[in-house]
Length: 234
Image 1 (cartoon, helix red, strand yellow):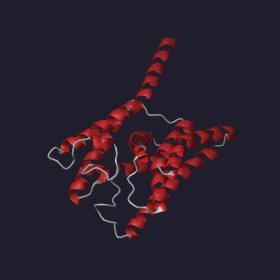
Image 2: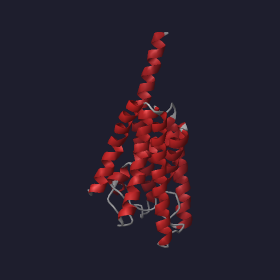
Image 3: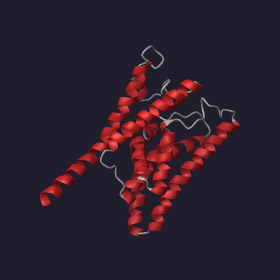
Image 4: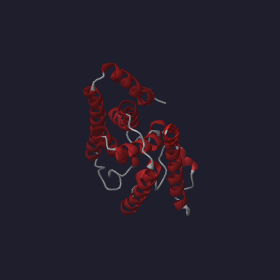
């Protein structure tokens, strides 16, 4: 694991906690909102810079450069959650960011050896889960009751839209057509190029929903305990 990957992994999970401790000490709303804008602008700058680089390389094509990877959708949701604190966008960022985007930090599917492209990749893929943790710590945002069902429906919409785009463009968005070049969890699934390709997509879908269920379970338990406590106090 290269040093830059280790550094971003540490930042993802330690950075928001340290920023939250500093925020509590400062007790400044401007500081809290400033961190939100810093995360949002850093990720957008990385995405725009990467897109410009792809265009200069002549690869700004429908089968390669459309914003149809799950991390692209998670990025939009995260930026809106950071800047507008929309609860539905926070839920999308929470589940997609922690269940999907965070895994890219472990098995990054990098398509360029250039340092700044690698830096931009990790800025986005570390920024999404780090932003989610920051919103949990400092703004007390939480998945609301029914969040798992909502994320399940949004995920089915994403998969259907991505399959349609892949069929129309010949792309591999969401890695729903083929596995990434690097080793990942997808290596455990069915052969995407065989006659049972539908099973490969189904395995991705069910695995993602399972991880989302696990991520939502602590909040469901906390909500259940709070409701029981409220009822007992009446």
